[in-house]
Length: 304
Image (cartoon, rainbow, N blue to C red):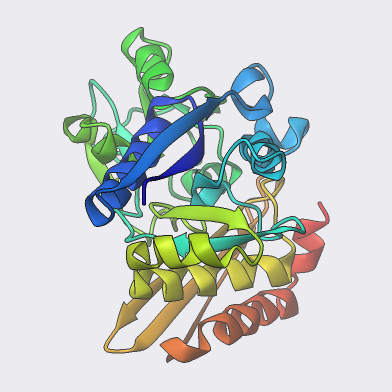
């Protein structure tokens, strides 16, 4: 029987790539399924002249997509997991997390090959509080300037000479065929990635068993463990994008290593901890790590 599945997606090139990737995967799995994209503009896409924390945080990139599902205009929504708040609104759930792409940050420049090569007081563009606090720790002399917009917009500003370098996610550049713009993959020692960075998630209406069954083959088990641990840490910390929070999990032989970071942009204070355990304990480990950070004073930093 022919059936149509509608995917709610933002209109940015990267969001469309992600939605089209899910579309292609599903159409290969189910030749009789027609998958269509429902393209939407979100508040986060429309307001580009203010830093994200001031206009409400990353949830602004997904609210309209959830409304479209609620109204029956779409069946699923495809998101970058780093844009999905730790608290999923009532009536929705994460149905699948797909295999993670390169999760690290990228240094992009036309004149310099690495952050270390930048001259004193060089201008670096990023809008991420997480990146800012870690950049300041390794290069306190840098002038860090706000940079918003989609990947192509940010690259254009770099190419027009507004910055000596910019920081983006490796995953987005790779997915858009712009891997050659990456001058340096920044190690997790220098810049711990954002929670969920590099992973794509599918949000569905709660208890939609038909859709759950349909998308189940897309689930990547290892990535799901990793993202579950990172998000559990974030949930315990009640972290939004008002403060620098980073969380990064690795899996090796059923063992998960989770590293977490909370920082203060104004004082430069960085709290960093790590926990290890079995993958089946992913969420418990996330809470354990958050509690370690809280015991070091993370809550005081998070309150600002």
